[in-house]
Image (tube, rainbow, N blue to C red; front, top):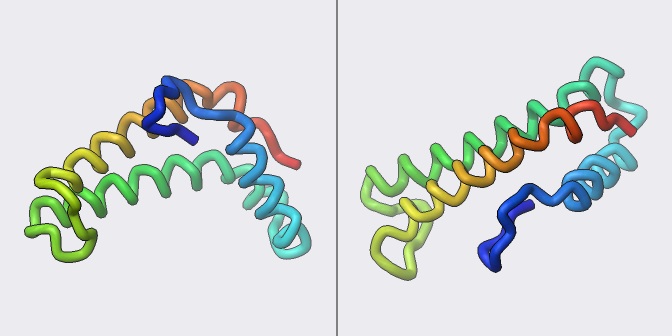
Length: 98
């Protein structure tokens, strides 16, 4: 939803594609209430990935291989920035339920 090539916003088209793709396969298994949590699930997954990168950074980089020193910390920061950008779109994205 955010890319290092200069995006400074969460891309709505990517969010809609993920929700629509997931919904196309899971439509019959999800309740209406579960569908209302798509946005929260996105927030949670981004935050969880940031914490995984940070934990690996603090623990010696054993899980996620680094190609340069401090890469997992940079990944953490990128995920937190993505979370901020995602949250800035909450009023637009949170109500989208296909």
